[in-house]
Length: 134
Image 1 (cartoon, rainbow, N blue to C red):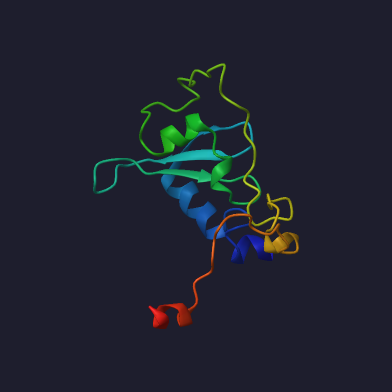
Image 2 (cartoon, one colour):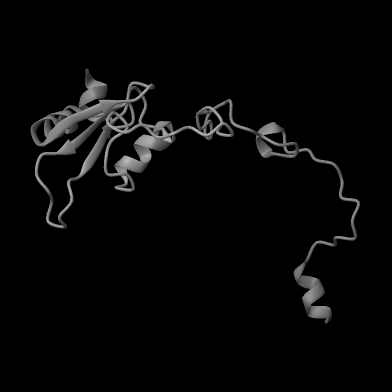
């Protein structure tokens, strides 16, 4: 319960849920459980604001392309009304693992010990003493 009150990254706070529930209309839900809302009235710029309440951690990369297009006013109708056609070359969603223990760490990365093969090129590191000699 305390996470719901004080932390936004564990999902929407109680204040956000109250505000979106008061001003927004439920539009739909995606395959990940994220719920989408749209304001009842247009804002000062003439458009209705759109919101997502994440299921679990607030991870923007977990918004599917069709809902992303609707959220950013690229698509007028939500995917519940007009689904986006999937292309055969499109790949399935893969979560963003940056900042987790499962993140990609290439050879030579400090997270993998920082050891890399010696360079075989003619690279010579710059030092301030070289500048003075010129």
